[in-house]
Amino acid sequence: MYIKQATVNNQVGLHARPATFFIQKANEFKSTIWVEKDEQRVNAKSLLGVLSLGIIKGSTIDLIADGTDEKDAVDALVELISSDFAD
Figure 1 (cartoon, helix red, strand yellow):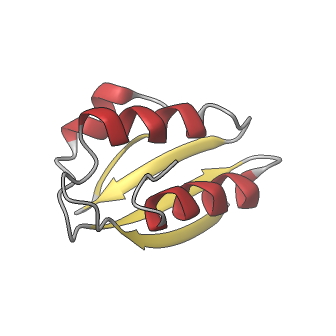
Figure 2 (cartoon, helix red, strand yellow):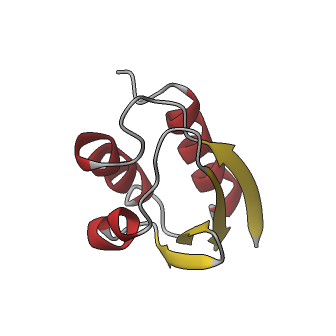
């Protein structure tokens, strides 16, 4: 299991378009991945799950992965968040 914390700083948080990019990136990995905010944990590969967390600008989240590519998965998602979802 690999865990890393990230702060979402883009203007709209993890809603709509950024959430879709996040889900697409999470689905590139074989590991099971979760997003945790305020002790609520959801599947990082589920759009409805991620949206249900209400992640807004300034939110700190934990990214948790378990599997063969867990470190790569978490690091890629942290990098995506850090880039403010820029292409």
